[in-house]
Image (cartoon, rainbow, N blue to C red; front, side, top):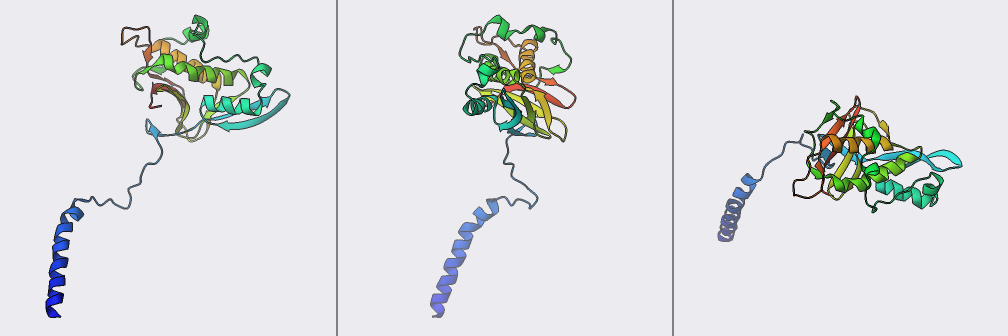
Length: 223
């Protein structure tokens, strides 16, 4: 019996000796460490954008919808298939861009603004941002408003690796006309246009349009 106990103890010691290096190699995290579950942009949590506005022309009651500009548009049309016709909205995200669409006259009055920081964000191909911008313009042709939650960045649009964001700098919800976010994005493109980096007519840009309580940013995103 004594021999069996001695053998078992020797075996246990051998196993512990084999496991000890693994235990020592495993980092011990302090209790105060928290795991970040939300994606962030510039240190701010990325959240869904909210849109608030009437969906039926003969009913001024507001409806709140969440998501990117495209997802919100799809929800509106699902609720009221006649929304575009009732508000005189023509939306075609696959049609070729005209100079009037790509370079609205009111953008030029904002060029060379000190509030635009072309050093912010990561370079993205702006041609791919237009889908989101056109959806934003469509949302803004009605009476709808877009928002970002307190001290966070709302993902306004993310398509073809182009991200458009509305970020709140204050501890409260920031409301902005959806069409203004679209105009801000186009203004960033015009002022921070990096031109073509691949010998094509493609436009590359990134930047941030700063306001007192929020900013709009165009940047490369994985989407």
